[in-house]
Every structure is written in C-alpha cells, then in structure tokens.
Image (cartoon, rainbow, N blue to C red; front, side):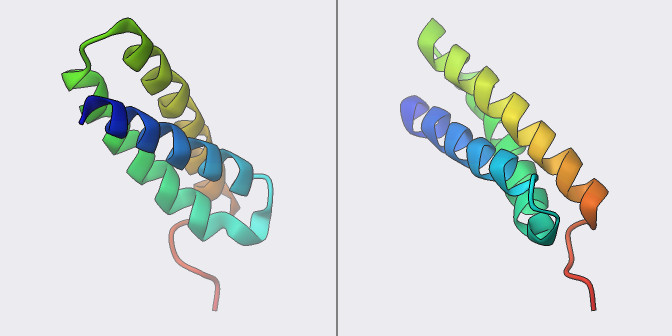
Length: 80
C-alpha cells in the first residue's frame, strides 16, 4: 500500500506539474496538484523506507508547484 501511494503521489505531481505550463489546463493542474499533495502528506506519514520517502518528497513538491501555478492561471473551475 505504501508503494502504491508513493507512486500515485508522484504520478499526480508530474501530471499537475506538466499541466501547469499550459494555462488552459489550469483545472487539471489545480485539482491533481491538490489531490497529489494530500495523498503525498498521508503517504509520507505512513511511509516505512527511505526510497518511499524520497519518491513522496518529489511528488509533493511537483504537486505543490502544479497546484499553485494552476490556481494562479485560473483556479479550480473552468472559465465561463
């Protein structure tokens, strides 16, 4: 379970980070960044090994950057 959460955090973080560079994809980066950040915090709490913690930190940072840039580009909801 711990490895799955670490990989899920990394995947959400990478998608959010990449989507943050496209202003039209602000909804994706905002939501996936927030989801990845929350998942990463829980995964970091229950992690057992150093490699899990390393993957969690990379995913957490990518999720945070993706969420912040997504919010800056337009937020959680699409523009009308």
